[in-house]
Length: 164
Image (cartoon, rainbow, N blue to C red):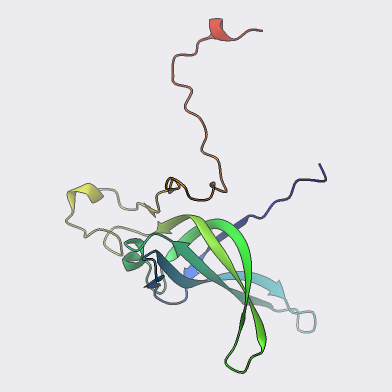
């Protein structure tokens, strides 16, 4: 058990700014945005409840079309991993940045607020429907996925197929 480790983040919050999409020199898209999460804490001196907000920087790779739906104030569910990187600022000082690399992202919104236009037939008649980021399969020759897809065993298993 000592060899195992877990790096998993789950956020449910609101976008603090519109997503910004840029491209690497090789043409891979990277979208960045911030997510605010709130919690209620009781002030020990006054006994009053107050809200505290934490801000999380999120990055989404290879999803340039999703950024148009990620606008300030929208509620999102983000599942991913923490990643810390270092860089040197313009003064030569080493800086560190920790961000959430999204592996799953669901835009929680109601019809007409975001996503496809309200008149789009593919949007349907539901009053609330999430817009989801599809999971990407790695291209041939790329690094292995950090998350394994579950195998499809088919629907043909019955009680007689179980050996006990």
